[in-house]
Image 1 (cartoon, rainbow, N blue to C red):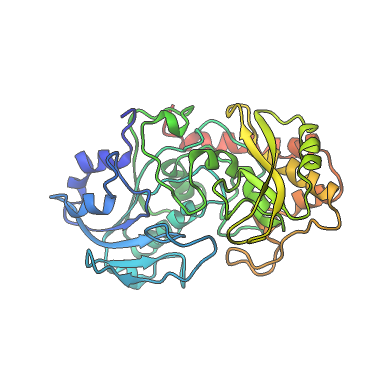
Image 2 (image 1 turned 120 degrees about the vertical axis):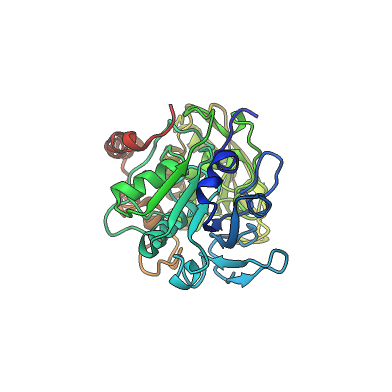
Length: 390
């Protein structure tokens, strides 16, 4: 294997430090080692670790619930006998009653490198609970699958924070969970007792397929690292009435609707001269969510140069073209969205109403991108003190 993520270092040399502590584990299906054995079982079978509770984020401990489904509730697992606590249901922050089961909480989940992905905010909420209840927080670091170099997009503005944007970070942040934990704890003053167990061998310019780490689907609509590559931009399609490809085998790489004529749409996108991506016209029929069972025209994104590809810029171009071509059909999706019942979902995803208003007034792609370049520069400067890896 090319790298050893934080789980290995924790099991090899760190658990002795916590021998006398009852450990909680925040995990999901991605919490595995290189042989696909789950962190839960590694801890249960470890001679110096005592696992007493498991906490699950959005999509559940086993990643089986779809987006925005909050139906999964806490329960006692019949196989392990452990309490499984939901952090995406009645509460998103561990209660004092939940925390009574543990002395320290271990976080070990694969993130995808995008601001909207809620696992990093579950991590932040657990950190807050640890600070509140005077517990230790331990983050086992894993790779950012779309590299730790590239940063893109505007930061979340005041008044638009949500569970898809809890802090002012860009759409694509270029940080690992461990680095984000250090930033959240210090810059945003969570101030918990935090340990980050870093990886060995990971370099910032690595993409996931260069790490030797096995890919496990982190959520039902994140099937491959290719999905993660386009997601920092194409997730914005969720805030419209156009399908982002859920209900197909290539979510976020496919976009379309029944009112779209594929060839016309394709030609306009080609004229945008977007770097590192080609578009292919297609027809598709989603099996669930938007336009379930209806034939849709659209395009599929084919990333041809992932180092040049700009997912946020690409998604904004897609939305601009859709609105210009189909002004009588294209709409912004209405609330609710991710526990938000007032603001438009697109504004929540974008982190402000600015991008939507720019699209509505016909602001050029160049000018839109120019606006968020300042945010990117400031964020790069801020994050420097929290970066662990070269």
